[in-house]
Length: 417
Image (tube, rainbow, N blue to C red; front, top):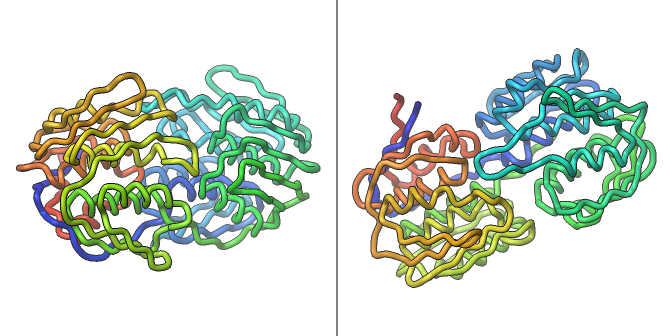
């Protein structure tokens, strides 16, 4: 099992490119099931989750290739409409094949994804929405069995804005008969990227990026060639690395339109943030100022940046508070930061952080994807050598982050066990 060794204390400087967005490319790959033929997606990040989705689609009969940040998916010879447990259990996004399989083939058998380290994340809203479109749903043997003659458009109001649920329903409704209206829809930039992808395939979706999405179903969709958006969470993490190390970094190819709240919070820490098109420069000098954040669905502060900001606050001037409203178990990195000397008290869904003068290196263990990024940031400034174990979590969402940080001047190496 690989681990990182980080020797803290280096100021990061230079330029770095943002990779394609994991949370955008996975639904795009699932959406390829909506059309017969070969679709090609560019700017694909080299991540474990992407490889898992390729294996899942191949298991169904898709002809796939992945090289040079481009994935080719030919669904002409799809043999089965099933997502097996052995693949779904390793990646929750596998459930996104449910909507497109049901819309195109009238049937789907998909393993229930279960819970995960950061919370239960149930898919009841996915299933409720599909039933509103006319699907018959049965849950037996740990699998979702969904069937329909043809999905029919309907009005669907989500009890809460769920990203995966919105994506599954958008894909299903794209081939449904008539109009579907999704109220209280998720508004994340990745939703907009999926809508753009389906529209280029010949779909008719409007309102993506707002809480009211309208989908007019069509008879069929065509395979296309498309470039996925850049990863706003990776971009935010790299900018945070510049802040915590008192650095000067130019982060290139950022999806700036989806990052305004993150950029504003980084400015509030005292960082000088300059935006030039899709390039963002962060310059930091002087002490980090304490800030308060509350995670919320987009356009609020993203839960996927909460842990990284907590790393900044461990050495900030003053007292910070972080309220986590999205996932119930997303403070598991706190105990690891405490091992490094951080002063953090958790009270339910709130963490209170009192900044300290410095962090001390220690062996720590990553518990989930964003907790891993948090520990990397802490390691960049900790005194001594920090050992981060279980970095396979990090490999799910960051493409060779150790190489990018090393190019900026960090002393970080991957050790193969």
